[in-house]
Structures are given as C-alpha cells and as structure tokens.
Amino acid sequence: MKTDSAPERRTAQAEASADAATAPPDPRRWWVLGVISLAQFVIAIDSSVVNVMGPRLKEAIGLSTTGLQWVMNIYVLLFGGLLLLGGRLADVVGRRLVFMAGLTLFTLASLGAGLAESEGQLLVARALQGIGAAALSPASLSILVTVFPDAKERAKAFGVWGAVIGIGASIGTILGGAIVNADWRWAFWINVPVGLAIGAAAVALIKLPKPSGERPPKDLAGAITATGGLLLLVYGIVTSSDHGWSDWRTLGSLAAAVVLLVAFVLVEGRSAAPLVPLRLFRSRSVVAGSLGEFLTAALMMPIFFLLPLWMQGVLDYSPLQTGLAYLPVSIALMVLAPAASQLIGKTGPRNMYLAGTVALAATVVMLIRMPVHSGYWSFLLPVTALFGIGLVFCLIPTPVVGTSEATDEDAGTTSALLNASTQIGAAFGIAVCVTVLNKKVASEAAAGASENVALVHGLQAAFVVLLVFLALSVLNGVFGFRRGVIGTPATQEPAPTPTTPPTATLTEPAPVARPERVG
Image (cartoon, rainbow, N blue to C red):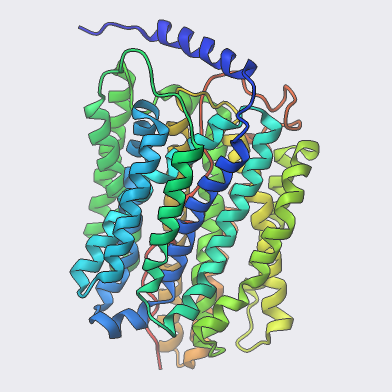
C-alpha cells in the first residue's frame, strides 16, 4: 500500500530551503566552481578532439567507417540516455559521491581509450566515457546550484560555466588538430592527469551534507522506462543520417521511444518517489530553460560540425588550421562572458537571450550565403566572431532561467533535464542538417555540378534548416523567459525545483555521417 508522505517531505524541503537561504555562503564556493568547471572543460575538449581524428584512427587501428561514426555515437547515446538516472542518483545518493564516481569512470575509460588496439576496445572505452559523463555532468551542475544559493552570484557562476563549455569545445578542435600530427592516443590520455587533479581538489574542497532522513523508495519502473525511452530516442536520431528518417530502424526506434516515454509519464504520476517529479514540467522556468538548451544546441552543434567540411573540403585547410579558425569563438567567450554575467543582473535573462539569438541569426544568414571560395578575413572571421557572441548571450541566461526554481531536493534531476535537452538538441540538429546536406549534394552531383559547388550548395541548404530553430528560439525567449532582472521578484520563481545548466551543451557533437565526396 502506498504511504503518501509527500506533504511531509515538501514541508521538510521548504524548511531546509529556508535554512539554506539564511545560512552563510560557503567560503570555498568559487574554488568549487573552478573544480566542477574544469571537469566540464575536460568533457568538452574530449568531444571536440575526437571530431578531427577520424582519418588518423582509421590508419592507426583499422577503424571502419561505421566504427568511426560509432566512436561518437556510442558516447552520445549513453550520455544522453542515462542523464536522468544520473541526475536522480545525485539527488538521492549524494552529489559529491556521484561526482567522484562519474569522474573516476570517465578518467579510467579515457586511459582505456588511449590504450585501445582494436575497434571493439575503443568503442567499449567510449561507451564507459559516456556512462561516466552521464553521472559527472548533472552532479557537477547540481553542486553549482547548491553552493550558489544567491541568484546574482549564481548568474556569475553560470557565466563562468557557460564560457568554459564553449571555450572547451572550440579549443578542442585546435588541440585535436595538433594531436593528430603527433599521437592520437594523447587525445584521451590527457584526461588522466587532469582527472586525478580534479579528483584531489574535489575531495579537499567539495564538502556537502550527505542525504539524511529516510531513503526514498526506488522508482525502478520509472528508471527503466525513462532510460530505455531516452536511449531509443537518441539512437533513432543519431542513426537517421545513415538510414534515413523513413527507414524502419529509425521509425521503429522513435516509435518505441514514444511508447516508453509515455509509459514513464504514467508511472511517474503514480509513484510515491518519482525519478522525475512531474511538477517540474509545470514550471515555466524549467520548460523554457530546457527548450533554450535544446534550441541553442540544435543551432550550435551543426555549425561546429558542418563548417569544417567547407574549410577542409573546399579551402583545403589542415585540421590545425581548421581548429585555429575557431579562435574568434573562444576569444568572444573569454572576453564577453565575464561582462555578460554582470550585465544579466541589469538587463534580465530574456533580453540577453534574445540578443544572442539575433547574433546567431546573423551568423546563419551569412552561412546560407556561403561562397564557393572565400578568404578567412572576408568571411570566416566575421562568421566565427558573430557565432561566439551569439553563444555567450544564449549560453549564460538559459541555465539561469532553468535553475531559477532550484531546490536541494531536485537539483540533480533538473540539471539532468537541462543536460538531456542539450544532448538531444545537438543530436537532432546535426541529424536533420546532415540529411538535408546529403540529399542536396547527391542531387547537385547528379545535375553535373562540380564537387566543390555541390558541397557548398548542400551546406547552404543545411544551414537554411537552422532558420526554423531560430524562429522557435525567439518564441521561447519572448513567451518562456520571464521579464525583470536577476534578484527581482519577476525572475525569482516560487516553486521548488533544483536544476543545473546545460552541459553537454557543448559536450559532444552528435554522430553523423560525413557526406560522400562526389565527382
């Protein structure tokens, strides 16, 4: 028989939140921010490094074309599919414990990936990296929410966090280009000493109270339906570029995902201790933050993934030159993020998010008009600079809004929702754009266009798709984000719901097939 202790739990949560609000801030909080930001930085770099290593991996361990795609796919699949479970474990078991467990697994898996001598060994290591990241990411973000209870300080912390993620993704391409010319194994081995340093710092600095009181009952049915549904959803999306959206494998995966996710909602509505409390979906801030994460990733990751095809395929850039071309993105993030984290307290998250969307719109318009041949200064520099500006102004306010109702009880779960939105948005955006790209390249080649012309026209068509995400992003900003500024009643939401910002936000570009060369 179900013993409903929910009212008592909510009362206890409210009292705990009130105590937390009046307690003095943790004097170590900015050092803690540095530790968890470095953990996310490692994940972001690792993802970007892999993207430019394809040819080298084929030579070194005989990786097949399918295996190369799954070096990325298996990571995204398990990372995105297990995020909700990882977030809930952080809430129930303890954020520090889950953080350390995820970091340990990710570090050991990185060591194993560097030692891999075959395709199978590398794929197993990448799968373990995905599982480790699914625990590490929501735990670290929920720690950030917990140690920064003040809204204005939290906005500054998210400014640092967002900049670290974007810088990691862009610097990873530079590092990857350099590593390809040396030894590809160091793309993974570099995580080992960094992981050990992060672990030592986390033990010394992160001091969080262990979960107390009666342990909530396990929501096994919710865990199975949510994890299975997300795994199938991500699988259907990331493989659509190989098989097509109308293929039975894609449609079957997506249909099964819908069935399991509907079952998950029904299970959660009846559970005494749900994996994801359905009340989170009634919070405008959580919904708007999750949509913001989804749409920003759906805009960002296709640009990160597709633009190098033009640089290397048409302009004949080397991997290192391709990475260096993204330097304006990193510079914009490093220069503007500190100012933006201060400015958001005056302008409010809505105005900043919409400004970022306008900058991304200008970037997409330029990409749609991409020339067959162009110089760096006349095209790539303004494109990447605008791209970096847009990312700053979208990445910072989105987690601020998504976590504005955060409480200690649900911080990990809300963080996982935002992270899952990022991963699914990235996978979906790239899969749709690559599908359009491949079809356009094939039709142009059939019409007799040269290889370079066919590729450029295909990329232009793919970037047109991003206009849909831009329009939805504007609507989300206008109707989802609250007015007002940080710290005012207009932005402080009443209901209790913890959350954390989008990590994966830039964690891992979804796996997609590079278009076949034509001609």
